[in-house]
Length: 166
Image (cartoon, rainbow, N blue to C red; front, side, top):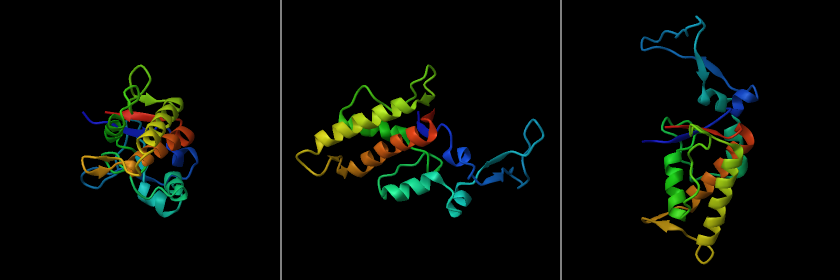
């Protein structure tokens, strides 16, 4: 089973900066929904090319140049929650995860995102207190943990939490 975390409310849509494109079928023809209207989706590439992607702007401003683990479709503002859970396990945290905190397990509230980020940060600081590295299976996980912490906080602040897709 996989797990991806997606901004609950895409900031580019909320801010009105998303570049929308018509979705096409296998023959390259526009798809119509049941209501007869054309089906559209966000073009992350075009939104970013116009410097209108709040995620890309925030990443650049934060200096988060390494450690990102995108969701399975490579969408930049998605996070691979299954990897986040691996990082949490590596830190030795048992009561937090990237799954949703609502009854269906499909939404992670801003409060839950912040609490998970805070716990990850606390445990990371404990792990690296005596050493500047946190090596697991030959890999230094610090950049990836820091990115996960940043992503959880960004999603809490900018997207009203995340939707969990698995």
